[in-house]
Length: 416
Image (cartoon, rainbow, N blue to C red; front, side):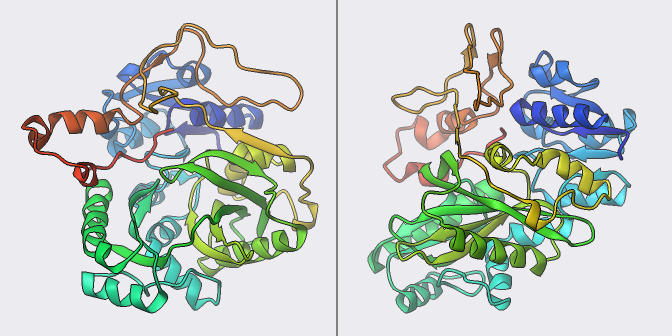
């Protein structure tokens, strides 16, 4: 087992990882930006180190600073949490090259599954169900039109490096395609530095079903039921539920089988989530794989009794899976609500001081949080950067904007 783990994140996921470290008897190191010096995760960790100013690119996404912190504190592993560097293949590769264990999948896993078009192609070649669409990246409007004509409208154009709803455009008819194609590419480039896109059939009112998997270093893989993430706003999940009311035992077994096959097709290691679309005829299609712990992992823990974060750490330490497939039982029902610092009417982000905070408690209630009375919600780690970029934009300042203005912008991936 590891002696000391650096938690390369902030907020509730950092608190969650530190808790798992304490329960395993492993010392933890919190890193923090200057503005987070009094944050809960900093106070809970055994050690802490400032890694830069509030700007995430200079702190929580600053690979040299994080690795220096790990070296200074003699950490033998890093847990990335979610967001920030969790799905950064380069970061995982650098950790591997200098002998610090990255608690998550391999850099190759992250790179392969992070390219959505490539992942889709791999799954198709392994005979797994994928949405009708393009084979790999689409490089021209004409190519997109040919694919759309073949599979039928409506279609959706997606960023190959995408996530969180960025770089996606729904096209209902042919005359919308040109604008949507360019807008998706521009947004993908702004958000991810990669304008690659692909095309898929767009289903009206599908369900978004994801399957949690765990795979140890020996390749043994299990699934831990499904989560229904269909309630979303702008492709961002708001409420997650397990088990899904749309999934019976037979469908659950089939989803689990395909999720395990998907993971094994790329020799996946550690925790991951295979995401599917479920249509009204109860047919399901591979959509993508998230190569990290998910925000919504607690509901799986609640119904299975399996601590996913501790399993991540144990797997990374070379231990075999603690559970066999036949040992995994789903008991009860669990729903997660994501509570964000935002105006309830306009959904705009709200910064400020939390003066009162009284979370619910009692049997069957779990609250994963990093806030308490006196905590400050800062403008650095939510949607505020998007608002600042808009206000600083020369075209906006000169009044040159329309309803298409936001298509040039994209918020950074959620940090927590």
